[in-house]
Image 1 (cartoon, rainbow, N blue to C red):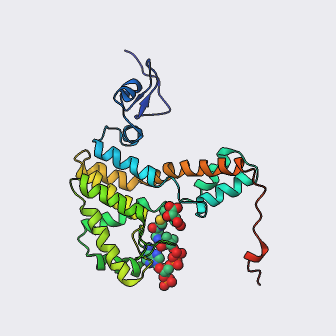
Image 2 (cartoon, rainbow, N blue to C red; image 1 turned 30 degrees about the vertical axis):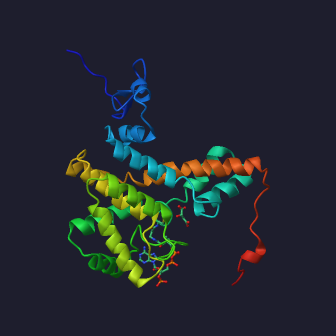
Image 3 (cartoon, rainbow, N blue to C red; image 1 turned 60 degrees about the horizontal axis):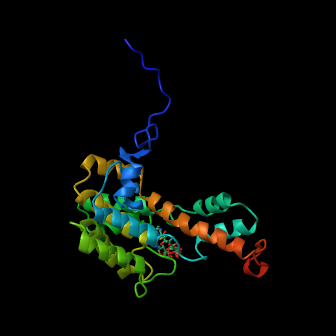
Length: 264
Ligand code: ACO
Ligand code: LMR
């Protein structure tokens, strides 16, 4: 019989061997003809399925809201300094992207993991927050450098408002809101941040849409797909900051001595 030559790569998300590339089996022409958007393309290439419109719209809102947050945040600062050092677009972009992590923009997966474990495990918000404190772990998705109880993050409000009127269930989000109520009773800086909003709401999207098995939800949370949303979104802003610096012909950046405490 026929013997299949062994392959060195397995790929399941896209195929370019036919007349046109397909994303998860859907030909590109069909994506364009149906008027689909970037949320649909993410659904196909990341989740390997078409998702209902409210889900793809939610993904698109996440991308739009996280695209930029001004020049002062870690990522934009790095991209600006790199662009001003005369480096190219890709170097400036990745220099900014490399700041995304547990403190900045990359807390979405951990927020989803911890909120899911706490909610599914039946912990009250008080028990959850206090157990994290005992372990010496900051609650991912809670806390912000400039946002406060009396100056909330508008992005969080916009995401929650969309989900409340479009998602079949927002139980994880409501749990995260209760966690925030408790953390805010401890300190005014412990608001829900955009990572916490996306992390908890994506749990609701995964669990409530009926499009994923329980096992698939667990796998997505365990592998950690969700920081990808911030990485993708913020690339838009970091590219913008790079172009901005080049357009403005900004010189090499050097941090002022006055802003450094030189000490022994
Ligand atoms: N859980 C518990 N306690 C917290 C948390 C938290 N998530 N965040 C801050 N605190 C406490 C700190 O322990 C500190 O208390 P202490 O002075 O008694 O030690 C106090 O609040 C002040 O903390 P700071 O370190 O001054 O807060 P900072 O402004 O430096 O940190 C940060 C902001 C990094 C976002 C922090 O809140 C945090 O680590 N949050 C969890 C990670 C996270 O969600 N990151 C995403 C932020 S959103 C974004 O980047 C797009
Ligand atoms: C962001 O989206 O970059 C911000 O939430 C972070 C910040 O420190 O403002």
